[in-house]
Amino acid sequence: MDLKRLPSPDDLLILLTVARLGRFNAVAETLGTTHTTISRRILALDKQLGGRTLERSPHGWELTELGSQAVAAAESIEGTLGLLAGRLSHSGDTLSGVVRISTPDGFGAEFVAPALVRLQRAHPLLNVELLSDTRKVSRNRSGVDLEVVVGNLEPGNAQPIFLSNYFLRLYASPSYARDHGLPETLDDVRQHGFVSYVESALKVEELGHRSTQLPVPRSSFQATSIFAQVEAVRRGAGIGLLPNFMVTRRTGLLPVLPHDFQRQLPIWAVARAESLRSAAVQAVLASLRSEIQDRGEDLGG
Image (cartoon, rainbow, N blue to C red; front, side, top):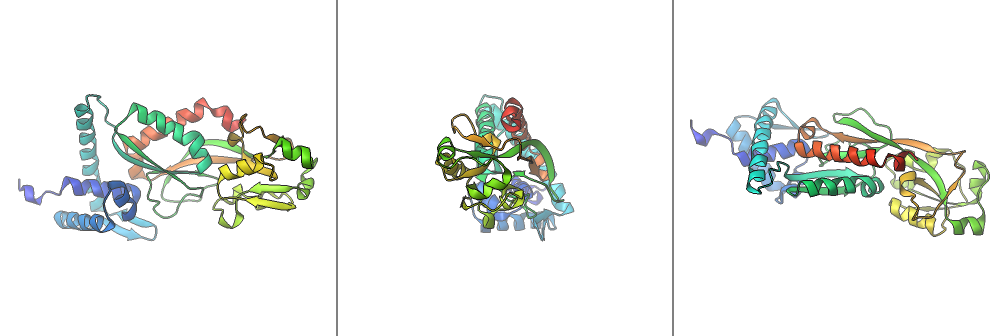
């Protein structure tokens, strides 16, 4: 066998990472190198294999038939290296490498981060990158292994995995209720200040005030961060449209018209087929499902 004709294992693993993340920039960030280096290594791999492994689509880089065959080999190499890493660490742990996850900031902090911390304690060779972004499923290759998104899904190339439902409800602080009173009907909301997302920057319309059919409020406090919204409501800026899992005993907020208004939204995990074959991604999904199951009352309450 002519070893010079065999593809580089390093280049195969780079191709595997491109297949999962879909963007050279994201791959370069994950591997600690540059876009130019990733491009050069893919070109070298193509030359070794005698054909193109990737083709550009309107949504990002996609595998060719040859690329899919090369990725199958890369997955075998990855699995073998995982076994070796476990033996060298004397732990028998086969989960290693980097997993990148995109998630809305509130759900990410309350559910995804605890799930990942628990997972990382069990698998210390695993590295995690958590990106906060509240959006619908990206139609383009997103540069992450797993997207956590809210709201209704549009058809796409990635596989959606239902996680749970949660509720958006109206809340106010005790100080706001004391100083301004609380609405007795939904129409009375127009007489109050209102706290919600910045409508012009909102990527998931179901999270915004405009989609609720509630009347236009007297004034508004809008923020792209759900944590800023909770704090604004807590400090008396107005009535807030907040996820129920963000309103805990420590916030001390009061429900407003709980029998007249609520909105239920689904939460999904979305990944490409190449990512779903990753043991690390499967472990993340299992840990996240466990976190949701253990704290289901926080989402459904």
